[in-house]
Length: 340
Image (cartoon, rainbow, N blue to C red; front, side, top):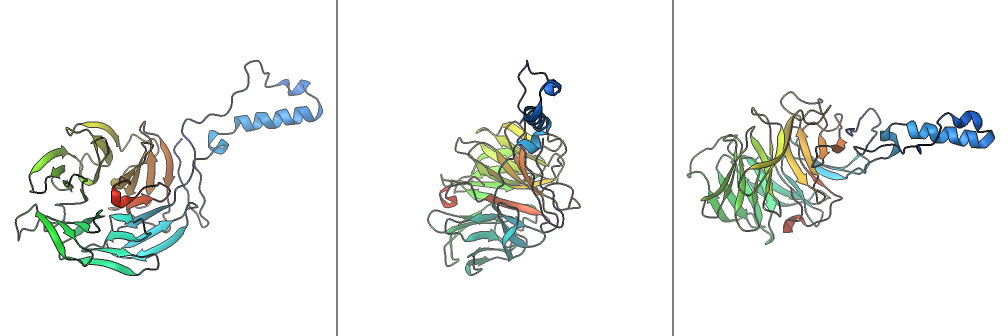
C-alpha cells in the first residue's frame, strides 16, 4: 500500500509499511467459536478478531521525516517538522538546490545566485551572477562550488565570493541557454558531475575539462550524485522518456530504475532533487510544475523493490518542491556523508 499524506483545513498524516500483514490466527482456531465462549472471554475474543481484520494501514505506521525543501515556483525555502507543519521559511527566487549545513544554516541557489542564510535569516554568503544558477555545494575547504548554466562555468568561490577556480565547459562569451545545465556536484576526487538537461546526458569531467564518463539520460537529467560504490543516481523529467530516477553503474549502464507507471496509484511528474538514504531507499522531489500542480505527492520515499514507504503532500502551502534534504538522517553534508 502506498503511503500518502492527505491535507485538509487541519493537516493530517497517515503512513503505512508496504507488505505489512495482520497477525494470522492459529490454524486450529475456529473464528466462530465465540458462540461457545461465555462472558468476558467471548468479548475479548471478539475484540481480538475485529483487530485482526482491520486493514494493515491501521495496524502500524511508518515514521515521518522532518526535512528542508526548496519550492521553485513560490520562491521559498521551507523547514518542515516531523508532523508535517512548516517550522521555518525564507523568501528567495527560483530555488532548486538546497543544503542544510552542519551549523544549521541553509545554502541554496537563488535563480541568479547562491546564498547562505542563518536560522534567524541573516545572510552570511551571497554570490550573484548574470547567468542562471541551478547548482551549489559547500566544499570541505570552506569554499562553495557553483554551476553557472548559461555561462557553462563550474566555479569554486571563497567565503568573500571571490572566484578562486573555474572550469569553462563552454567558450567564453557563449550562452548555453536555459537548458544547458541543471544540477552539478564536485566529487571527492576533484572531478565534476554535471547534468546537461538539454543534451539529455550526464557527464563526469576532470579538472582540465576532459570527459571521464558520459551517461545517457533520456527525459532530461535534473540531478545526479555519486554513490560510495562508484555508481551514479540520476533523476529526469519533462522530456520524452522522463519522469524517472535511475542508478547507473561505473560504465554508465542502467542497473535500477523507477519510472512513471511503476508505482500504482502514484503519478511521477518531473523528478528533480533526491536523496539516497543509508538503508538504500531513495527519496525524490516530485516537481509538480508545468500544469501538474496538485496531481501527485510532493515527496516520495521509494525502496529498492519499488515500494512507497513514505510520502508527503501539502497542496495548500507548497507548490513545486524541487530539492530536499531529510533532517533525521545523520551525516555531514560538507564531507559528502549526505548523498543528495
